[in-house]
Image 1 (cartoon, rainbow, N blue to C red):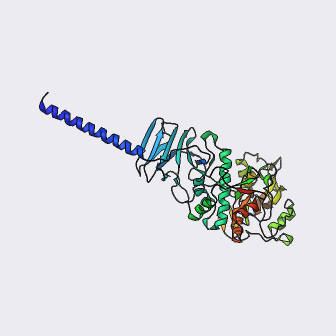
Image 2: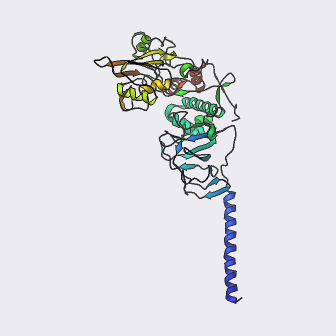
Length: 450
């Protein structure tokens, strides 16, 4: 072998050896980084992340990055990504069933393919991308206390005061643990999703006031005896709450219909005449309600017969024939409509589910006037089932339209968030607020080891 050839071979071997050493060193450096490895603990929650409009849990693509290095694992492969690198997985490009993305400890992952109230959301903890026949499902695994940092400001304005925020934190914590114990998405090993169907998660960034409320109540849950309370809550009452029969369940002692106001009266709101009188604040029905200045305290809309038929068809009801009448024929405690009769010339539909009663009058494009005089053009559903109706007829006595006079926003069960704000303003502690809306319960700490 000639001298020049020996020198060339030696040089090539030197380059290869140097490359190998650099590779080993770089791999060692990356592996020395501390990542938020997924852990299964009693204080972790798995949240299915919805699409940008919260309408679906199946994504066509998922785009993720981080401002710190992060790791992507699938099958037997581990890839290390630098800060700012972008990972894009689509239904077509996914070669594995599950991808696990973990950030460095203390960092977060940003999902660029989702839009929320503050832009592209960042998630602490791990992200799991599951390739399914319906599309990509995105699951965030995170500790409950961290999860609450993104729920409380998404569900209640940070300006509502410390005690109201603490009450919200406890309610949200209870709600989270209820779904950890009774998961809603077992097919994806997930507990709940991030939409209004459960409790809104990460539509707002963490806020110091909310963080303080979570810290001040760390680990605190609400119990009735040894039972973990199902802490349902909602935006605004019309002056009264309902009870546990709302969704067809049995009575629960801590869900009692009550007046949210100065008086402790409990009128018979199952009576149609009494309900109308109280809704219109006439005569003996003129109560002092804590939420009477809130925008959703009262509202009104008129929905045409065509819209009502369209809504009923979407629920797979038979809408053949002429629509001849609509009437409220039952109310539950607190005045919520429990039975709605829709009459046709050939048959009758009876709606008893709260969700269907509200959807029947869904004002998709109609004007909805609120308590402060503001008008919305269309709304996602009827704000509540606390309403009475006036039927407007055609000359041939068929239904032309229905005017709905209602109050409150939400299902009406448990704590009203604007009511909690008012109670905090007049000196209630968070424990007082919770006892007001869930009587007979008690705040308990460390049930879940927090």
